[in-house]
Length: 67
Image (cartoon, rainbow, N blue to C red; front, side, top):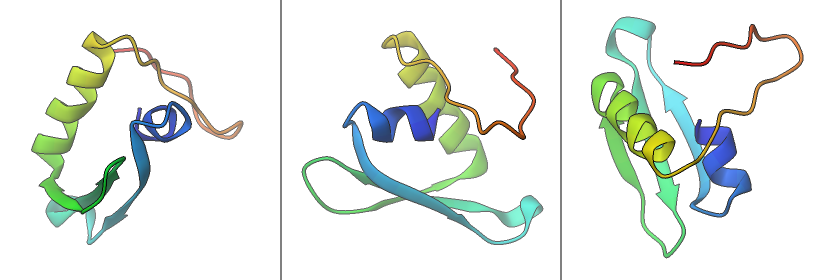
């Protein structure tokens, strides 16, 4: 979802940091600044993107799962 949001211009970029159980997502929305989300908050953000019509982009090596 975050890849798709970047391609759509909603985000300028994003990255994840930390181990899975403590992962944080740093999002850079179009318009400046960065926002750090917990994994749970990032999932909520992705749900909002879905509700807004954004659909996931997958790497060729990733399984394609639609929520």
